[in-house]
Amino acid sequence: MIQPYDDNYFMKRALQEAEMAYEKKEVPIGAVIVINNQIIARAHNLTETLNDVTAHAEMQAITAASNFLGGKYLNNCILYVTIEPCQMCAGALFWSQISKIIYGARDEQRGCISMGTQLHPKTVMTGGILAEEASQLLKKFFIEKRNLN
Amino acid sequence: MIQPYDDNYFMKRALQEAEMAYEKKEVPIGAVIVINNQIIARAHNLTETLNDVTAHAEMQAITAASNFLGGKYLNNCILYVTIEPCQMCAGALFWSQISKIIYGARDEQRGCISMGTQLHPKTVMTGGILAEEASQLLKKFFIEKRNLN
Image (cartoon, rainbow over all chains, first blue to last red; front, side, top):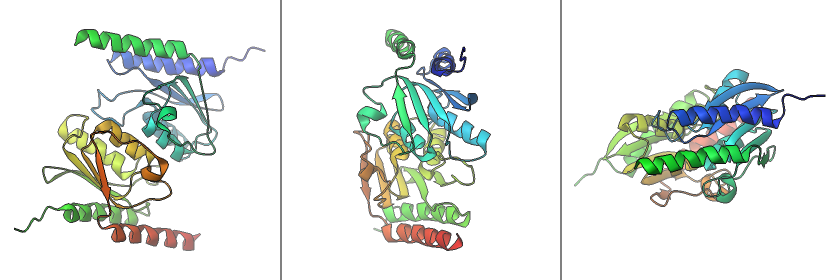
């Protein structure tokens, strides 16, 4: 049986969000939140556009998903995010009690793994889905940014 | 010389915010952000009202202060918050590069110190200002909540 709704499918949607961020000259990171194979939130980084460090893709996706569900807990939800969450986003995910976090590429410097951020005991985190695509988009952004300055 | 704008003065404003949260049956935590002795943001926890785990007092205050300043960095700003920030809020404060964080009471369980959240090298954090008042308000909230259930 063909399963169209697998991790690659949803991570591709998150990557599309990251590309939208890239088009806006934002650090290109995208996220979607899924419940029962349905996308209930999609978002991309808007820190420059909104002049707001809290406007990471994951933060907006958490708010949108809670809004959709009418409750603040994201049990049974999966977050797909193109880059490993930072301390802030992992901290928000802790409060949300989300079931699963699936990231694309690691963020060795500022990601929650290196920074030692604690996840909720109910949350499982895995990574490496379309990592190369996520990482390449980020690299392209920073190379272009450097060349402009 | 009398200095009306000291840490106690601004923490009292943060406590007033916490009391507003208490009136709304929210976990009573309040925050203000100050630059050059001027309050540029005030907020209180609204996680229940907004059904959103990201709606902590500090997060809203960061967004409001950035909006006021027209930039996402909070250099030269001081955050006064009645309770020690959590991982999420400390993570957001990391990105904001805020100069100083002054909290009232410690949060031994979920605060950024116990959880090991990293602050920005430009940020200094101190605590204990009106700690008893902040702590008593929180205790009162949780005792009343327990008695209702």
